[in-house]
Image 1 (cartoon, rainbow, N blue to C red):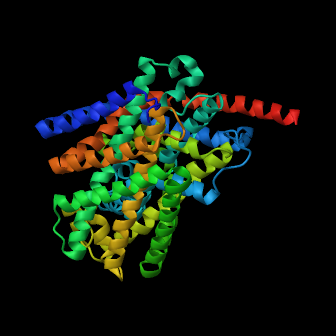
Image 2 (image 1 turned 120 degrees about the horizontal axis):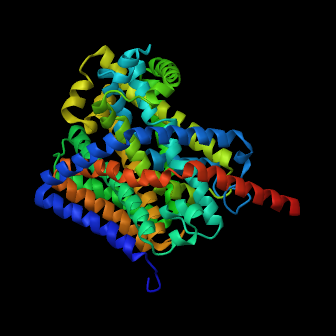
Image 3 (image 1 turned 30 degrees about the horizontal axis):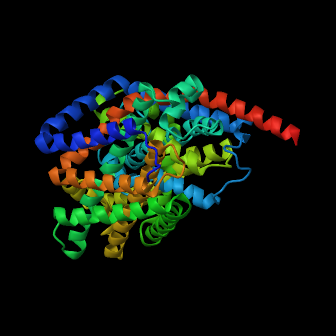
Length: 506
């Protein structure tokens, strides 16, 4: 620890802002909430259309690169991947899916089923209520969302890494500014700070919501009081898992936890299919995916109802863009030896399809129960919000109590896996090392839990405010992600030429 070199400006500014946010929330939570809501509305209004275009163009370029010779470029220095495909895919899948794996999978399809998105009514698209409900969720957790998190940015980072540069958000601009951006500069520091704050906001929010969900679920299952003490205990149970996982590193804790969670989630999905409405789930997935693909461009570029857009599509786009640099850093760290085609097909196609099917299994089951018994899911969703939705669904399955307990458990692991991966990535940024010191990794994991607990104690609104803050940080982060649209193909071409020369020498 004595010889540990830290980027003190980045650490001080990012940590200082989190501390300031907590103090301000304690002093006047209402003022902080109003300030964040104002910033959120401004960001959505002025950058919403830009984000929609950025998302879809990123996906199109990723598809183009996958289909051309650029797809054959091998990233990193290894001739073969360091992780098996399953372990690698598991780490990508669970880290990027995060709290959405349960919170939104249960609630979002139901919200859209109950209240048809205006993009369908205004466009006159031929879609049933079920198709509209599921395909809107497919859009928000589909090809575009995954593409911005782990395609073009990874190529740029892996190119810079090959040139001896550390994996930091500012490294995304290395092909433009060279060594200047990597040294102590206002621009480089600002990029790192905004990226860290966005990742913190997007990670602490789900940790806080998990505390709410766990408190609600344990009260329902075992009659335990739904108090802050129970929520606090669950948060630090989760953070303890994340800290141990982050401390043991990518090769052990993180990849093991990710693989374990994928296996448990597959078992849960299979069990719901066997005991639940399997035919309805499969039919709904196929028909709704057809609706999603048919309306892909109109849905992606919809610019109608501003209120709906800012509350749904723009919120999610801001969330995913804000996460973009940190996720690209993590994926770069684990993707040594993978080709661009392998990376892009996995991140931009396979992962979204798997995610959308999981949303259909969980959310589609909720829609099925709601259709057959109106109010059986929607009443609890409207009264209890996100924490209540999953329990309203699984309680109607055979062995409902067991399912409820397993969903609490799997949610803990989902969020813990994201927390350990993000704490690891932030530690890489602060230290400039690909294997940062254990103490730094543990510090960030514990910091996530501490901030979530304090904000939850102040009130659920403070958790909402911090999570909404990621949309504000997405404004500068989106400007950093923009150059990857042309830098990714250009750097891939350079890597292709280098690899061809190496092969010729052999």
